[in-house]
Image 1 (tube, chains in turn purple, cyan):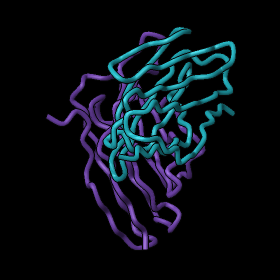
Image 2: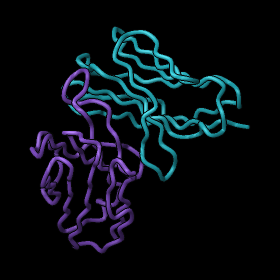
Image 3: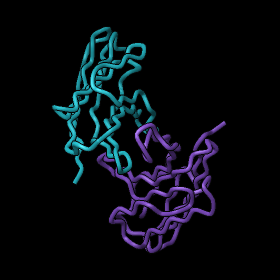
Image 4: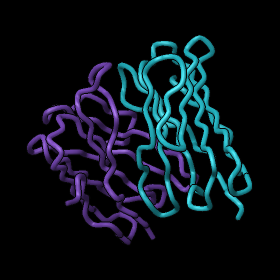
Amino acid sequence: DTAVSQTPKYLVTQMGNDKSIKCEQNLGHDTMYWYKQDSKKFLKIMFSYNNKELIINETVPNRFSPKSPDKAHLNLHINSLELGDSAVYFCASSPFGQTGLFDTIYFGEGSWLTVV
Amino acid sequence: QKEVEQNSGPLSVPEGAIASLNCTYSDRGSQSFFWYRQYSGKSPELIMFIYSNGDKEDGRFTAQLNKASQYVSLLIRDSQPSDSATYLCAVAGNTPLVFGKGTRLSVIA
């Protein structure tokens, strides 16, 4: 029973194309995220949603557009893909934590995007 | 700019030894602290979290937090080759988890 699932796992596409990654969590969490891990393995937050509302948008190009139809789903659409977009994109979710809104993050398996 | 610093390694230890991984953070308002393990080609998985100063033990793992020094560490006792992975320190407060760049640990059999 996968807690945070994302599809597709691998995606190879040409520059200029548009692609989407879908994510679903069955943990009952209110907060969901998209993180990007680059070739140097640095994991950096892109977006955070709480109960379908965007709460964090970290200086990400507007070619990236997240969408949360409900609190269990958070999708990522990328327009006009560039070579530099090649990375691993992790969806994640977290419960309301002991110290506040942001607490332990549970990651999906990742989506490996290669732009050629 | 919130920052989390880790030595990138690789840190090599012999099997059965204690591996010590360190992390410093810049935001004094940080409230929760995490260690994740990431095997190559896999997603990060939570090992431990700690909120209060002092030590927290879970099996072979001990997390240590010193808020005054803005320092978090992870000790792995009786290291096994299966512990070879990248260990990510993460810090959260009023913002989502900020990750360090990770320390690559290699346990030599």
